[in-house]
Image 1 (spheres, helix red, strand yellow):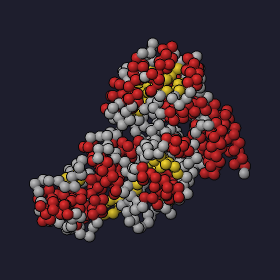
Image 2 (cartoon, helix red, strand yellow; image 1 turned 180 degrees about the horizontal axis):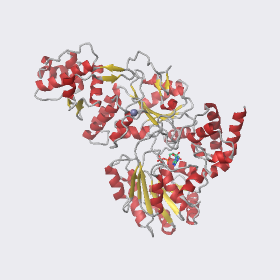
Image 3 (cartoon, rainbow, N blue to C red; image 1 turned 60 degrees about the vertical axis):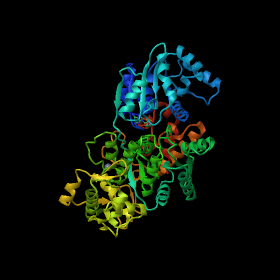
Image 4 (cartoon, rainbow, N blue to C red; image 1 turned 90 degrees about the vertical axis):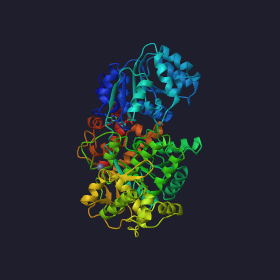
Length: 633
Ligand code: ADP
Ligand code: ZN
């Protein structure tokens, strides 16, 4: 087993490398430093695990969280690789014996927390480093070393000096999912990477289905969704602890096996809930953004945001926890008007780590995501500076939407004229959506605004009262849509102005259609596309299964849900008896492929993606037996 491909097949059970993996493996093996920037779920682990397995000596993997280390070690052990972790939770003797076995060259991968490298706790470990044969140092979640990033950890600063003090400098491989240029440069500097090979794979996650909903009642939407997929693990993100509590309670009352997670709970409950979720004992995790970093559960089938996060960065990071195993998964954002004010409130209270201006700019782009009727995937990728050549993706809620479009040409003209007239009247001053809505309705919703409006003479502009019949919230909704589509610009404080699209629109009287999302939607869609549950009005990537015609080597198998359920049950039993998470046995994707291919001999079983030699020997016959029984029933 001497080539990377052989290791990929025999240990991990995969036939081909994913984008970027092979290059990184080869660069590391040639001794060069590497920085891999890859989205969650792209398959970073394989990139350093293969060189580690192929090298003599030990590879040290620095990882920020114990749970993450444990998962990785469990998964490697299940595949026959003698990995180990040392962490603060284990006794001294265990730690010593792990180090001894690494010194003896019996441990190709040793996972440690960064704290191990500095301070008093590190004495013993530094001694180990000075005599061990270290072939590679891996820094996982490398953005933690950067103060620009959102997860800066001081302990990461001890990494570079520790590497510097080694008798030989091994190759250093750093990995992160954070894309910004600032963070990337900072990682290279802070870790003192030596002319590294930098690989940035695209940020697209093809198996994720993106959707924005504006339901009248978020809770009933969520409940119906969770009940629709009773066996599928999902995460529901809420903006506050209080919301987390109430959503979890209501889901539980509705018969969903939900647990909660937020910073206000004591450690033991948090840990218990997290484990229940990871081990598939609970189906739905309702959490604040405190949950998720370092959680390596690969079979999360959906991430639903009950509230809008403050930026597309946060959104994509959280939503990206769905579908790490590559199976179709849903990322759904439930937008409500109150979300905008919650985020604004947090920003003005200084609870956002960015400067206020940056925070508002990010909020604007997040709001655009919620209101655009263009391709959601494209919106996200553009945000990360990726121009997609494909245009519309054909695999997001907007691209596949059956939601009716409404002609809002007249409303848009009125709103835009009002923005123009108000500015004209008052020497170019700009106003936010609430004032514009008041002018259009010819009525101020509060006294201080009325005072402002009369003082500036805004009640005398020609657009005063021309939308008397329309709700203020409806006007704001259309304004958000116009901003998202670039017909209006909104500065960081929400003040509106014209863009280069504004005059041409007014002049040419272009017809403008807006998707109405859930709002008061009465009429039924005429055509029910793949993935739509007509009864509930859902449109789901999980239901649709496959989105793109070119799914690459990891094609979707057509399979029996019943058999899938049986195999999952077996997996759960095995996992429980071995004390590892179910996905360390086989991923959902691997089981689904089995259900499609129905392997009946060793060769067929080994050709399933995710079945390596070791796993075949441990579990292969059991699963083949179950498949045989199912066929003969
Ligand atoms: P990341 O650390 O980048 O978030 P992981 O390393 O956890 O991603 O990989 C995500 C999933 O993809 C895992 O289930 C992993 O086993 C699987 N995977 C990795 N490489 C391949 C490959 N070449 N072919 C198929 N599946 C792969
Ligand atoms: Zn799309």
